[in-house]
Length: 225
Ligand code: CDP
Image 1 (tube, helix red, strand yellow):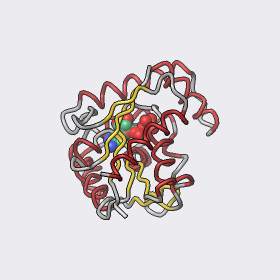
Image 2: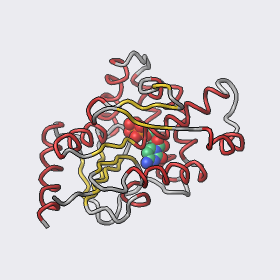
Image 3: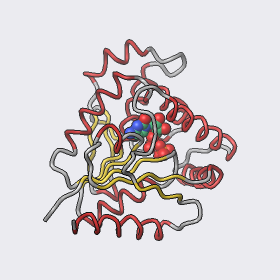
């Protein structure tokens, strides 16, 4: 049976991972959360320098000491940084506030892009992020771009964070989403933008189920081609 590379890019907290996990589960594909990979590198840098500024020269030199891998099925996936499970630690507000600065650095993107392309080499993959349809897999057959009203996204992320035990005000969450989107859209390397051949979906007024049905219908069409 034909196997696809499915890319889901878009703004922060639009439910990309939720949709990507469901698609991967339904299709029996591998799921890769590339945001989690950028977050893991940010956590590594934060652990070296929790108080001061990140030393990007040092971080670049340390990239060969960083090992990131995923374990478990799509809907219960865990991420490991140098053998330690960091699935929840990478969602801390401190990491939210640093990750887009780290992700703007060219050597870091180069390092992760290589890993991401290796993970997708056999196709049968759903990968979500910011530059997957534009830079990592420009050749992918099935691309989506999710967006939504920022207050809807902030409310959603605020509740998600509370459930994970990361307490932060709704206002702080909103500020972080806005600032990450701005950094992600304006950086010079692999900025967040819709690929010309991606299908854009505004999820503001749609349920998870409705969005999923739309994505899945599109995937079935691509599989039938
Ligand atoms: O889940 P959420 O939408 O909040 O973000 P994420 O997917 O975990 O990504 C966290 C951050 O990593 C983003 O704000 C980007 O700065 C960066 N990122 C990126 O630059 N490129 C990717 N392919 C994925 C994430």
